[in-house]
Length: 138
Image 1 (cartoon, rainbow, N blue to C red):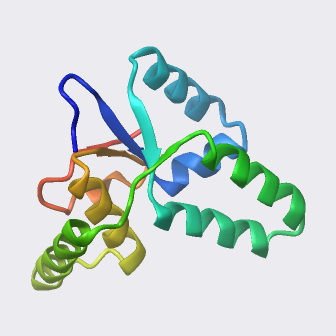
Image 2 (image 1 turned 180 degrees about the horizontal axis):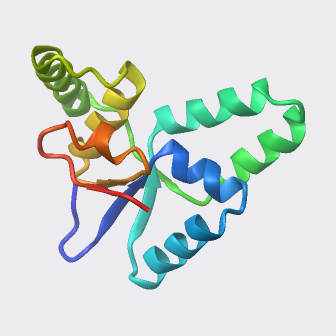
Image 3 (image 1 turned 45 degrees about the vertical axis):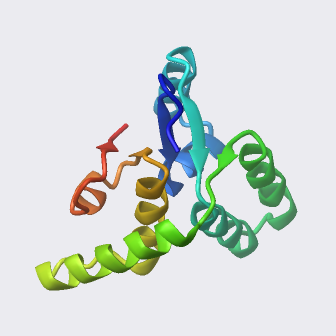
């Protein structure tokens, strides 16, 4: 639920990975968001993708520490009944359009939509297919 005057933004996996890797553009974008006073969040799906990457890496413990470090600084949006219904709509619309984006991304989008948040991602074209979702590239 949007609190009056609060600006909300959901960080997608590619942005979070770039932050973990200390990418200059991602760090600059994060500073910009913080300076604007935006509430920064992510979804449990993005967290799952980060943990998967950490466990599949060569330096599991080091990468798990990095993932936990970044996740602990973010608000975690819940996957609720409203998001579940939105997911069903998104899945049908994308199927009808012949432009599926993958289950994980559809779940991420449904959670962001249910919380009235925009998504920060480099996968702009992918997420822009979802009606009503505000997408910002970095």
